[in-house]
Amino acid sequence: MNKPLVSIVMGSDSDLEIMREAGKALDEFGIHYEMDVTSAHRSPDRTADYARRAAGRGVRVIIAGAGGAAHLAGVIAAHTTLPVIGVPIPSTSLQGMDSLLATVQMPAGIPVATVAIGKPGATNAGILAAQILGVADAAMAKKLETHKQKLARSVEETSKKLKAQKD
Image (cartoon, rainbow, N blue to C red; front, top):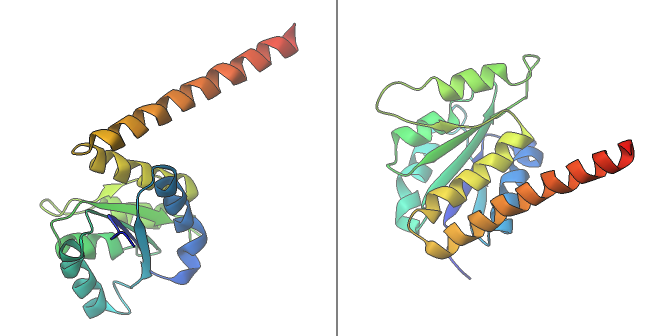
């Protein structure tokens, strides 16, 4: 079994439906990943230990999803030099705005790349992780180029269908 290059972590298993989207994106690029649950608030020692050990286990990028106060990505970033991508989860009546602000408003020196709220953000987190890995991996860069071409073809096909319906 290959070691995971990306670790997807979430604050609660209730975040799993959204965070699976990051895994689907990684699957599309053939990137091995792991999934785990740890909480910045309920298990702070476990979270710090997870972050400190990730690089030593071969992980190269961490995707962290959390809702509400959403401190998970920031706490992880404080304990590692690996790139951390935060996915805000819409888990409260604020529909993820609280999570977005908590994830994106990091102090200078502790960067967290933050993506959109919810499933689109999780998908983009997986693609961003592939892009980070693709900087040093020509085969991955080629897969990303193919992905972009596929997106462009999809737009062209949709455009043709709309024009055909009008005629």
